[in-house]
Image (cartoon, rainbow, N blue to C red):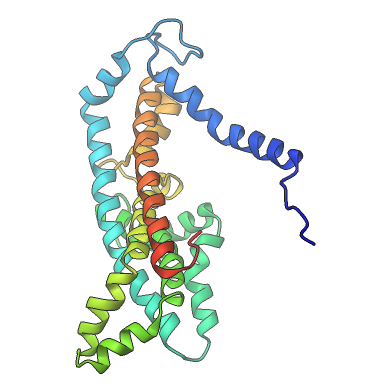
Length: 269
């Protein structure tokens, strides 16, 4: 006898309320960005693109956006390389205190961002990395690496080692078998980790507040300064740009995740 597994109505209601709570800020910020008023007004009485003109026409906003893109791109590359290498070491090696090392690598996900930001500030200040491009890159790589590690580790644990052994038995060198078999199969998982690393860097604001200087201001830090100093809908326009980019990348991330699930046979959450 099979017991029907139906989701209770209460669960759907709670899920709907949580989803509304998470998405509602988007429905507030986006309309405000099209307001013609000189101040934050919701709902907007008249619509205009003046604040998008102010955003794209201001050197400071564009400079901050470009800097965030550049930092996020470099972080995605570094975090993907280091996270993938660490995942291979965790999955395919057996060494003392492996679980402790794995936990240490994941610690940036557990430690509050404000604690990490303070620690990085006191570490980078004597090295003159505060307010520098590479200071941001190193800090964001520390935060993004665990995301890559989790995803690639899951992909490797679901990888069928017999495929790599078959390539070795047919005469392929170990590096060739790794590159042409293993890495190709887990490529969706690696790409997913890279996208997560990019988003983690591009959207990060807490560390940016501590590490930003006069010459290196990221877009999230610029938006934060706008909230305190300007209070104009231009910050809503900038936030809408970030939202649009994040949604686009999350769509790409979902495509990569589903492809990775089909290839590896495991769920990447």
